[in-house]
Image (cartoon, rainbow, N blue to C red; front, side, top):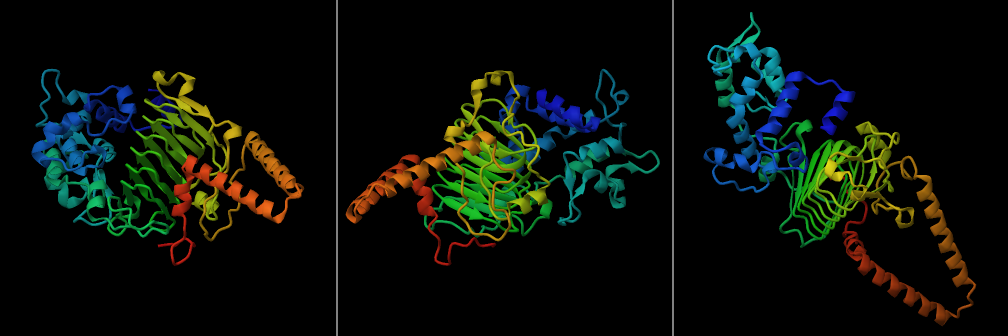
Length: 455
C-alpha cells in the first residue's frame, strides 16, 4: 500500500490499467505482504490449471518460464476481459457476455499486459494497435461506428493468437548466443549458462541471462549489453563486472558474490540473496528476502526495503571507470539528488531499524575497477560524503606515518628484505582471510593482454 500511495502521489495512472494491475495481484490468491517478498509469478497454485497446456515444467523458476506465463494468461483471460466491461453490462445474477461490447479504451488498457507482432516480425506493437488493423476486424468483432469489440469474438481472437513470448527468458536460454567475456578463467564454467538474445529481438527486448556462474570473475563492456534487461540467477562466489548502460537488472538466489554494474536506467531488484555486494548507479533499487547484503548505490529515489531482509548495509557509491559519466548521461542519471542513505521500510514487519544500517566510515574503502578502457571519468561522480572523505584522509595519513617510520628506522639491506617478506606474508594471510585472493588470482590477464575487449 505504501508503494502504491507513493507512486500515486507523483504520477497519474490509467484507471483500467490500474484495475488490471490489482487484479493480477489478486489472481495469485496471496496477500500484499507475501507478494512483496517476491512470490513467483505465476503462483505455484496455477500449476495444476496449466499442466494440460505445458506438460511437465522443465524450469523450476516460474518467473523465467514463459510457458507458465502463457498458461496463466489463457486461464484468466475471461476474467480479465470481464473486468474491463462497463458495470451495467454485467447483471447481478449472471456474468453473461454473449452480447457485451468491449470499448476501445478497455483494449488499450489490456495493452498494459499484452503486445505482439504481425507475421512473427521483430516489430512489436501494443495490443490495441494490432486489434485496430483492418484484416482483424472480422475476427475480433471491431465496429468502426461504435468503436467497440464483440466480447466473444475478441476473446476467441486473443485465444487463437496468444503464444509463448519469443523474446522471453526461456527463448533466450534455449536459442541465445553465448557472450564473449573480456575476463574469464577457463575450465571452470561448465555448468554456467550465459546467453543473450540480441541477435534475434528488437533492441527494447534485449535480455542477458547469467545463471550458475561459480567461482568466476567475468567482465564485459559492449554494445551487446547496452539497454539490456539483465537477469542474474544462482551465481556463487563470483565477481561480475557489467560496465555498460543497462535497462534493468534482477539478481536472484545468489550468494557470496560482488556485482559491479554500469548505470541502470530503471530498476535493480535483489531477491533471495545472501552476502552479496552490489555497486551501481541506478534509478531505483528494491530488495527482498536478503541476508547480509551491502549496497554501494547512487540513486535519485529512496531504496525500497521489502519483506524478509536481515542485516542490510547501505553505503555511498565509491568507484568509477572511464566511461561511467558518459553512460550516466545515456541513461539520464545524474549525481543529484542521491538518496542512498534514506531507504524506505515498506512493510510493518520492517519497522525495526535493525533491518538495515549505514556503513560506518571506519569500515569504508574505495573500490578499484581493474580494467583499462577509453573514457574521461577519473573519479567517483559526485564525490564522497564528508565523513567518508575524512576517514580516507586519516587512513592515508597513517600510511604516510608508517612509511616515514620504516624509512627512518635505519634498517640494513638484509633487515629491509626480511621485513618486506614479513609484510608480504601478513598481506597474503589477509587476502585469504578476506576472500580477496580468489578475485586477484582471476584477474591475471589473458594472453592477448589485460585491456578490456569490446566484443
